[in-house]
Amino acid sequence: MEKVDAIIIGAGVVGLAIAAKLSETLNNVLIIDKNSSFGEETSSRNSEVIHAGIYYPQGSLKAKLCVQGKEKIYQYCQKRNIPHQRLGKLLVAHGNAEEKILTKTLKQAVLNGVHDLTWLTESELKNSAPALHATAALLSPSTGIIDAHSYMQGLLADIEYNNGQFVGRTRFIAAEQDDSGFIVTLNSQEEIMQLHCDYLINAGGLHCTKVAENIIDLAKVNIPKLYYCRGHYFSYQGKSPFKQLIYPVPQAHGLGIHASLDIGGQLKFGPDTQYIDNINYQVSADLKAKFVAAIQRYYPDLDVARLHADYSGIRPKLEGPFDGFKDFIIESEKEHGLKGLVNLFGIDSPGLTSSLAIAEYVREKLAI
Image 1 (cartoon, rainbow, N blue to C red):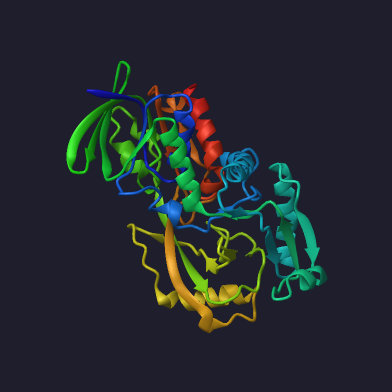
Image 2: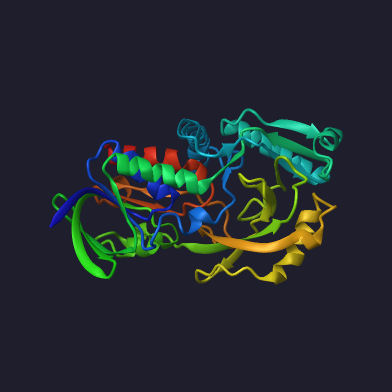
């Protein structure tokens, strides 16, 4: 049986970051994906925002790994010439009730180690962002945007430079632990094969729980329930009225329908949140009225004719529609008892921002 040092299941941005990190130490790292190329699901269907780490509960993995990952990803982009911009973000409020939320958010940011937020008054906003309607805002200067595809290409180049390999059209079937690692059964381009590995990383994203269910001897109690939460995006034709990202105060299960820019300067709005039972990327034109109402709260001069349905992404969430905050789950031997195995569950936002910090966290969990 052919042997590799590590197999990473799932070639989204987090799987690629983990594979790149492990390949610095291990000689033979294999990353697989059921799709033909890398990053075809959640990693290519998001806002491409580098988050500051403002909102998450103090001490949570999301808070710690986002703040750490933000600096790591900016450094990586600068070193590798990955297209990115520190545009900054305005978190906007309308009226006293929402301004109180901003005050709490500012305190939470400080607890999380984010000390660069500044409060802007209504008059200051009229000078800096005249198209914006808000009574106050927090400016987050360390929020930015990234070309996610170029970033993933860079990670794959690192993997290959370190003699690692990506193989697409390869489905994980099952894994069974033996005395020295795992026997992994794969369907690679319709050929069933088995490989042996010392380390097995489940970075399956939307499919992480299905992967875990096929790891023999992994107790079911260590597999959480996963929910699919779809977010839709609408694009806006023409020149953007904003130079920064515009976010409403946080909503349940998301950050609200915000305005973001891509590297090319294209303005888009989204995502909203819609829990669904099956993976489906449909964007209904019927959503437009909801988007218009949400956008006009902070951009009253919206030209509705320039707003068009664009794309959607699906978040792999651990919280259901009526649940509170749920953190990333990154389980290793200490939690589930299987040496050499790491399961990553519920890696939704800020997964992209946190990716390099998650990779380092996984490496530490494995003591490699």
